[in-house]
Image (tube, rainbow, N blue to C red; front, side, top):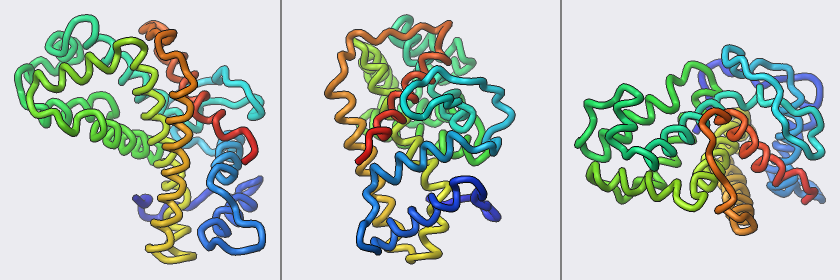
Length: 259
């Protein structure tokens, strides 16, 4: 957790009230404590409305999300969308042509037959890319978390191929992307608030506060999966960006309902 040295949180607009709300949450002070879902809902709205170019080089345009966020774009979440597009494309190719051929297609053919750890590390660099911006760093950390979940038991090349192939069966790729965006939302929140929390309440209370945020996101993602017919989800490589944006919007919309 944490942010790059010298990072300065955005200011102006609704960031001021959001900072005070987040600090109150960390302190658990006041007669009306902030619950995690309400804080996340406020955070998502403020971040979406922000003019700051979190990853200006990505060049992503407006998304097609609905809900009360009205006019939301994916600019503020651009590295996550780009990484999700890469993950969806690669996983779907593994399901279609196998891991060996999918690796060759992305220039990693020399890893065929290598251990799961070697393949996983190389895929992290290929699918998430460098952490040149804070947003890219958040996306990379989110993919690390996803890899740890999916590949914790994988040891051999065959193990990793089986896990990735199973992930795209019967719409399972939607679950993979939804879980990725859950991790990504959490990492973005940490980027913006970890140092502030430590400054205001100390590292122990900060860690406890962030754990409640993580738990809230994980519970929301599980509930979303429980209510979704995964068999209706299909990956279309030519529309990978749009599909990734839509899955991101489904995660963000979870928190638009008042807590």
